[in-house]
Length: 198
Picture 1 (tube, rainbow, N blue to C red):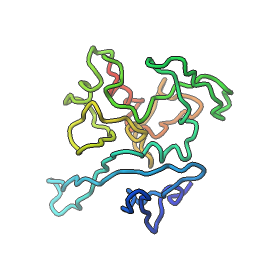
Picture 2 (cartoon, rainbow, N blue to C red):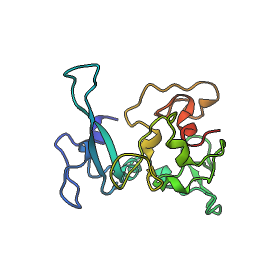
Picture 3 (tube, rainbow, N blue to C red):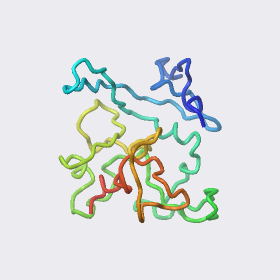
Picture 4 (cartoon, rainbow, N blue to C red):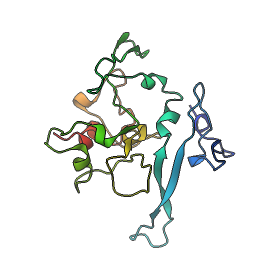
């Protein structure tokens, strides 16, 4: 896999309005067309400790990033059962040597308000995400960027970093068959605890 599997070095445009695509991502990823990706770059600001430091931008996601990821990660498009509809089995072959079986995947493109009413600590997901102790993870915000709201949605990039990171997994966090970080943002699957605190 190389940079050009996802990025077009010559730039790309959204077919819907002709604007430049976020981070020069390709218009489609084989074999699946990821559709329109709507994102922006919001100014992150200068580091006060480093006078004259570069003014980097922080990604701001509006919609479509999960569809782009599904261009290659096609197994994650398979529906899984939820409290709202437990009849969906989520049985499929993931080509991981485990055969066709029920898979448990976190739903994506789902509003934060659709999660459990309360988590293990007795608070809603939204309450957990707005506490000062919360590690800020990116969510898709269809409105203006800022404080997390109930209408914001969970996307693949909420938990995973496309280019990897410094997170480590030890003990029971080393889940097979990958036995790796699976590009998660926080150590020992801490991304789960960010919303679903015990």
